[in-house]
Image (tube, rainbow over the protein chains, first blue to last red):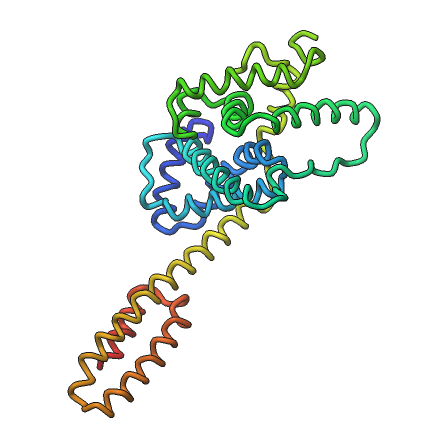
Length: 189
Length: 104
């Protein structure tokens, strides 16, 4: 059977059963498959790829610990985002007690780039800054929707709240982003 | 599912960071998971060793008299220390076999 015919969710379930039986190669395959989106999501949340990688590593350690108890009621990717979301909440609480927070840290140093690329980088920095200004639940919801293409139902599972709350947060996030980005970034401008 | 009233450049910028592959990440994760598994095994065995040693001591001490009982307790305490160091390399069945052997 060609690889394209394999249902990725079904394959995730098969690999998780192997992980639960102690198969490290199955864990390696799962990490290889899922870490890019997880790091992408976490980097958008914390603003630092190094911190995002640390957190993603912890997500997979927790997945490994929970493998025997895991029940495939939701997609594995949703479960991974759920672990990541809880880790982010814990990390923010922990770091809120310290004055300097890596979660609100300085952006990563940009490479030297031509002027046109610098202009693009400046726009992207404005976007990044705007996202960072959102309250954390609005930021998580809008990133999961727009960046990660999750449905409202999946976002509700990840964040452990109902769909109406997600819709409210996303609506508020959209309004706030338009306000933060100003008239230069209105659709069609 | 894109929000229609978000700036397309904003959406594009956000989606550009959707997926960030990190070279060698899977190996790092597997190594970290193995280390975590060993650490949890040590904690589990260390938690089991002390009560088991105490039970063995209770069984042996009365039969040998007070002085011999103290010596036995010291000996068992040393064995418990050895177990806590040695458990990371033990599978469950081996650990149980060693504990059973101490009672003989």
